[in-house]
Image (tube, rainbow, N blue to C red; front, side, top):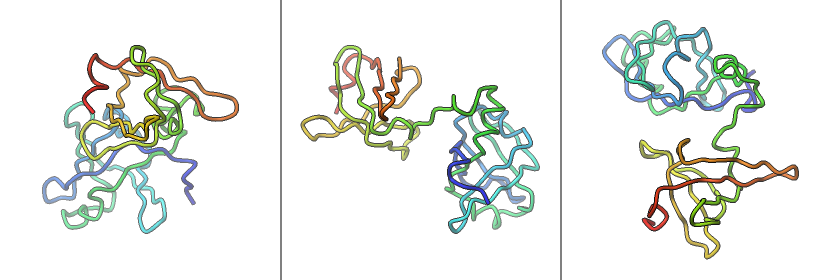
Length: 181
């Protein structure tokens, strides 16, 4: 049985493509990770179920068309639409050629204090909004208001992890971004 601790989110299935059961998938990694013999894991009725890709066609840098073994029609593919896709942590670490412990996930930063190089302390990271193409950090400011800024690798300059839990996420946001909220 696959547990939540063994897996990490790598993408999301979108709509079916064609009549033979292919699915559009957007991943956080280049499509090459899908071409490996790693199972794609989907939560189905509270259970994490592995599926293997029998075919992968790149569609842009982070998108692909995937045909899952055992899925042969558009109707069968529809049950996967909008499902989060996970992979085993060890498989992602192997693909990226890093140790499992080096994999940092966005969720690992929840509760961290967010500090901008120019604006100073922005607040505490409460969560993420992935309802748009760009994932946003939801930051609770000291006055109780909410600040939303993009969660993008190019904005993160450092992450400090404290031994007692929590930490500080240092960012360098473009001028004026903090004022947009």
